[in-house]
Image (cartoon, rainbow, N blue to C red; front, side, top):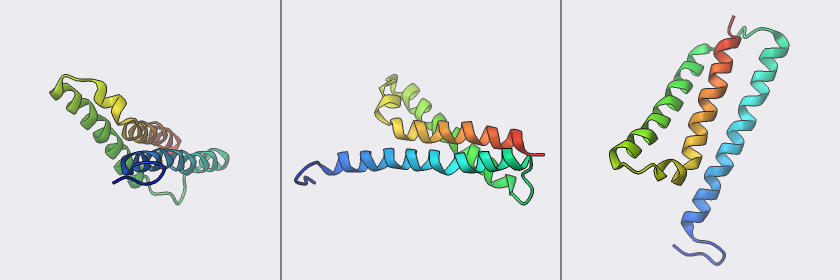
Length: 100
């Protein structure tokens, strides 16, 4: 599909980078709040466990695809997926460290 200024693929790719940015903004306030309160009381850790497992499996899928194809450009061709998985793992490890 071709639009006046860009094609459909470029539009969806731009939206995926927006999702990475929104995900970054989503995690930072919770980390800060947990740090300021020095507590995670009332906060469900199972959501973090599910989120970190999703991030790990997402990155492992990218690596597995690259290994199967013997072509590592798959990581650079789908950077938003890699960034979402890496951000998820990074912040979830931080959340798990904060749990008391």
